[in-house]
Length: 83
Length: 227
Image 1 (cartoon, each protein chain N blue to C red):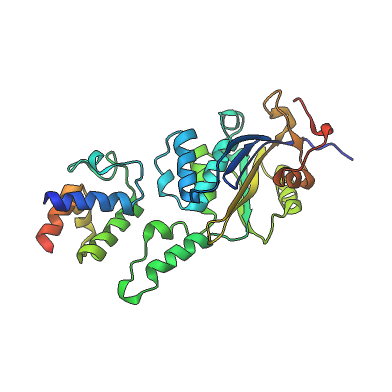
Image 2 (cartoon, rainbow over the protein chains, first blue to last red):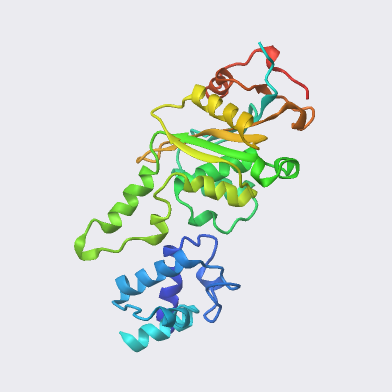
């Protein structure tokens, strides 16, 4: 899980162009949207693309997406359960 | 001939790794770093934190930084209402550099992953939106495509806005970037002479002034104006 979380952090920074952040600054449990990292709906779409392209996982239910994309840890847990 | 009420009060040029603000060269770097690295380094060195900067495409970063130098300080925000400032920008390449990168994400039918973050920048007018958000501008706006900077058109369009809309200040210019990341940016601020900051040099609101400033030609002494 730790390895997956580290990989996800690097991917999130790369895909979302968060050049001013280092992986160490991104907390496992920190909310990615809203008051946390401040990502927006376009970023959510980009994360959905990463899950599909790099892990072969599709989020079928948009309502579920909010919980899955809540933090790096929740994304990693969803990947682990569904791969 | 009637004296125009408007003057070009500020201008900013970015090209060849050089930034000029009101005739003063702020930065001149040796050739080497690519445009992306150059713009990021300028942003880190000079501009206040703006979390969305890194998410922008290169055209928007170029326009955003040019506008940020042009509008440095709070004069425009303090002097004009949000709907009294207009933005008119043109270029020759539209958003081609980003269009090309986006096309690469959909070129392979077996790896068809349209990149949403790139897609939102496949319109050049997005850069007007980025400038507007940062500087709280809600006035008239338009983006035009022409092979070369058309200074007559720039002047006429801005003049029409002053005469027919609530517009009291216009940001206009040329923000161009081609597929090889060759770039050229020039923005001008046009204001009523009475509302300009005091003791600032300004230039005649005319197509010839845009052209002279853009091509960095020496300006005549009678262009000196002290508010």
